[in-house]
Image (tube, rainbow, N blue to C red; front, top):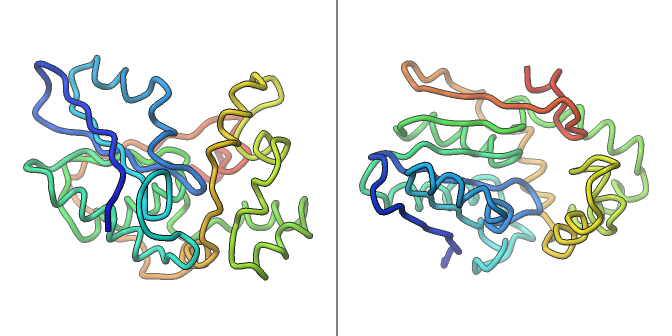
Length: 216
């Protein structure tokens, strides 16, 4: 398995690297729109990866399980010579939660993360707003239909006043996400408490996918 990684180092940096893990439908490119550069400018070594079948990584996401995604993240963390801070967004946040239950890291950041109990609120709202697309995703075992137009992408990830250029740029890069991985978000062992691990949990007031009530 060949995983795409965006790996940048400052000339003189901090001892602890940062690993960035994208959310569903996305890839390492999601961080490479100024976010990676700001962290490197702050003195951090940064590694953003694309899960299998995402971005320019090999393999297929069609029948990928959450366990396989966890294996992808684990392989990147294992290759580092120091324990990193892992930053996970959305489904990447849930994968990060499962990683830290099994492997020591320096810290974790959960950005608009899937809850340990699964994305129940998102599932209900999506099935209510887009019943045909939700049913099509189940039949095709792909979450691609949910991001099949720019209006859907804006509804999921942006606000009404987000520039059209940014919405279009994102829409062109999104890929069909695994329905099997989606189902896996509701399964698995409950989250374990990890004592002594620094953790930051971040949400956003206008997040349509994981609003503050879910993040809290």
